[in-house]
Image (tube, rainbow, N blue to C red):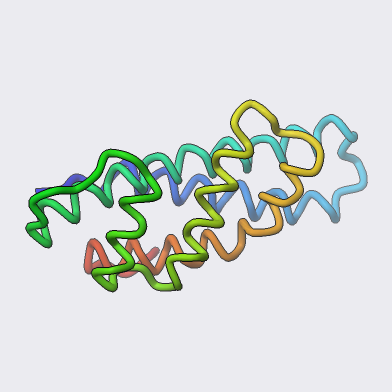
Length: 140
């Protein structure tokens, strides 16, 4: 049996911090450093959620679909999930998320961070749909 607890928690934390990031725009009392810290936190939570996702997805492909040979890296796992029609959006979109994860490694400022923040809403929506597919549970 697959333990989805880490995936659920990391996705929930990302969802909440992303909402906090949007709410920060309406809070003039926040300093620039506070706004940057919130944005950096969103990116860090994205990284954690993404990393937890591909590892959980690997277990899903093995345990639930019975695939005998599953690679041990994110992009091939996402492509395999796409071939097995598990992903809620085209695999190309998931590869965009994979590239964003790679681009943000140790670089939370500047253009890479802004590009990652721009795709965060879509990532969260896709992640919720994928979580529901894998677990059969509604998102709370």
